[in-house]
Amino acid sequence: MYLAINEHPGATNILRDLEATVDTGKLLAMQGMEKGRRLDAHITAMYDNICREARTLAEPAFAWSYHEVTAITGHELHLAGGQTIKSRFLAQKLAPAQGVIVMAATIGPRLEGRIKEYQATGDTLASYLLDLAGSALVESAYYSGFQQVEMAAAAAGLEATTPFGPGHSYWDNLADQEVLFSLVDAAGLEIILTPSYLMLPRKSVSGISGIGRGFATGEYHCQYCHLRCTCPLSRAKEAAPA
Image 1 (tube, rainbow, N blue to C red):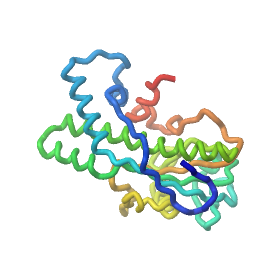
Image 2: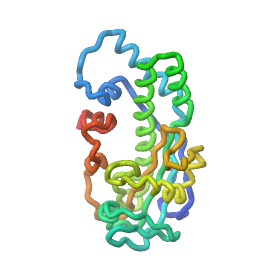
Image 3: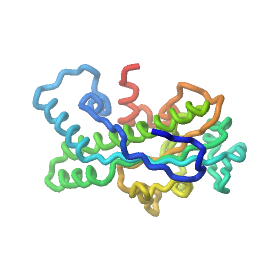
Image 4: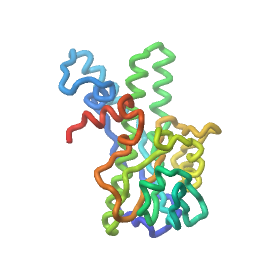
């Protein structure tokens, strides 16, 4: 697939042919269970069925757009379109950036609808596990799309930082979601932003990555978040093989 990073600045690109995965091992890791722990056959079958159902319900999609950085001050990123992202943390981490990629991803509303059905019938465990599986799937879709952007950047001789997203402790100003949504057409994925800056469908994520040269390498955004010891996705990341 041809993906030029800065060929059409500001234009939103949408990818739908994405790999999004979740399996029993991922769900167990998200719950903090030890790797290799033996489970009864009926428990394993239940987890497998939930993962299979989640994959069937997911409709992964990813949107991204490139924006030139005109200046970075001590706590602001200024973009060519006149938008400003105010964050001392991002200004430091993206300091060498010549541009930024603004992204959004979702797995659609079907899985969330199924969770509500489980809740309505009182199947709390199935709703909980399916919710976990949905979180894993939207993260998988997000990074599947980002990897394509990352490869396109590499083809142009550029680097991409790890994605950073509003709502984490290092970027707790959810109002910045409004800025991101002005930079990428998330509506093309049927994602809407509520007045309290939450995304619907709930299994949706947004973020930003710096494009340029000379960034610190080998970083992952969870290491900057205060919730990294308790977040299910962070626990699963730490449990993954190196």
